[in-house]
Length: 245
Image 1 (cartoon, rainbow, N blue to C red):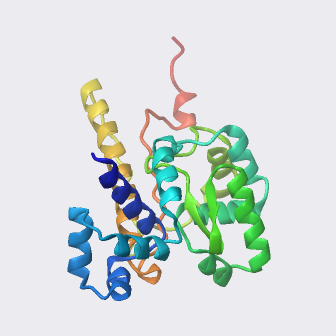
Image 2 (image 1 turned 180 degrees about the vertical axis):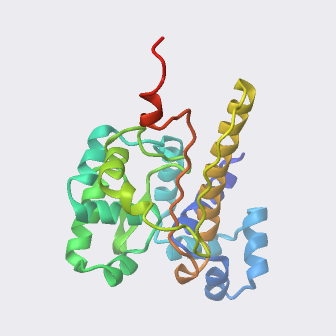
């Protein structure tokens, strides 16, 4: 990929992260939405249009180039210390989970009892933790990769198990957007491996859908939480009845 093409790809990523749609760009540039899509797909920009798109994204060309250099360094997991810092304060945990879903600053303070100044301070803490990069105008760039996941049995997962697990499952899962399946069976090694691959693919598809839907108006999307679990398991009361080897 040429340097200019890579810059345009980075610009597309930034626009998507900030919820700037092709339709919004088309209105500002005086173009049709189809024309904007062609411009990005062909990577065919005039300097004037490129300057205007950068302005709409609140970026400078040098900043975009620096972002391109850092893209490969996006983290897929936090350290235990970073996760502990998140769960140590309910407000920082709230804002951290909302920026993971890329909520705009204004939406957060409209939805929760946080003042603008308080939310700015929380954003600054997330910036220091390396979770976001704070940008002018209370905007931010998420520094976590598309494949981000919490540490296995780390502080966040332990918090969920002790504080939130019972609440999560306190529902019949019969709503229009709810589903819980519990199945049992005997699987060979090859079948177990294939099932794990499929579950990881579902998790990746969830992440891809989230990224694609960032182009839609915020109100069209609903925050969803998906829990995937599969393991050899037996009720403890059954395990206690096993014959000793």
